[in-house]
Length: 548
Image 1 (tube, rainbow, N blue to C red):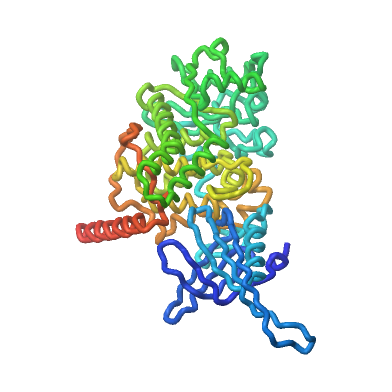
Image 2 (image 1 turned 90 degrees about the horizontal axis):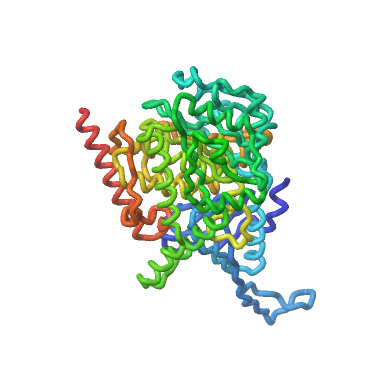
């Protein structure tokens, strides 16, 4: 596709830009296939603002028709039009910024608005900016990810006695959302896995996602069993789960739905593991919102954060009604339950909800952060996200298609990954020495998930990324974040590693609104960021002095 066909007006002079934390500025606005570029033309200023069009969630336009006609006549005998019209475009971004462009000329304003609307909503993955981004310090020949399932398995020698790496999904025919290789019990062959996959939602048969070195217990994840109203069973599925707890008295199944939701799912072909057939497994239900309910909660919270009434009661009421912090509390408490089953009680756990691609990944990730010291390092955390979200099949392109401002009808959008980052921030705030990365990393990831120069969050599965050439033609965000300069910036200078588990408090008074994200474009938050950066620099300097 030629981007030029969607650009009727490529640049406009004398545009006024109004943006948070800066005074209004006048300059030139340019639009390309992937960016808006504003260049300040005022004397003594060289400031530029570059905005990825993919970062635009919604635009609102208003035009004032101030056309006047001169009394002079052209050779053709018609009156000449004097350009007195103007228009305003309000741009609402997925990172929650709100920009305003005052554009002279009604036609130019409408042309720019049309181009933004069209180019910010391109659906073709290969036309998105990551396929065109070529940083000078990286090559497409570089390793794309941090690790593969094969490398992860090979590093965990203690697994090899009881677990094996299966390539039953090498052609993505068994489970479209799984990677080609997964870790399963050693005595379960591929033919058995194929039968189990037909009994699990989306073909997502139980696979290992975490092995606890202290006691050998594991966390498995899957989709729901398809028992249906007739209460079908699958002996191969029962055999697989029995193999997981071989030699142990019992295991736990954490279902991220209420028991009522699980019963309703059974009536339409889904279901849960019956005690009659899985008598060594104890099922625990913990309802977690997902999908539309979570997206609407996000929208309400952003609306509350934009309330300019300065009425504290109204603000608190809106915050409570959004229920966002309740979702944070539920996620952390469910992850705490999962970690407690493994770490304190010494039992293996299977986690699933319905599809196993949203809340399942959320609590398995948080539980690993709670228990595993390596996952709390900068590199370990990024590897965890790659393993549990990128490789495990979270549908980023669907879930992050829109943020909180879009006027489009809700489809499959859901801020599950953003909820994860908020929960990690709560851990970071409660345990400021235990995590090896900073809040700046979480903010960067929150932004990149919705609009990025990199290909890491493109598509919905490993299969799609391979089919569309993402790994061959784009750069990897996680690799970029581990380059020396970025590593220094995103590291926590106060980091003091501990081998102990970090158990978060989930009491309402212990949880706070993530101001750094939801209020990031307010002067108060910016002042706080500046103070934190100054403290960070002081700590780094003290560290250098101590070493010398």
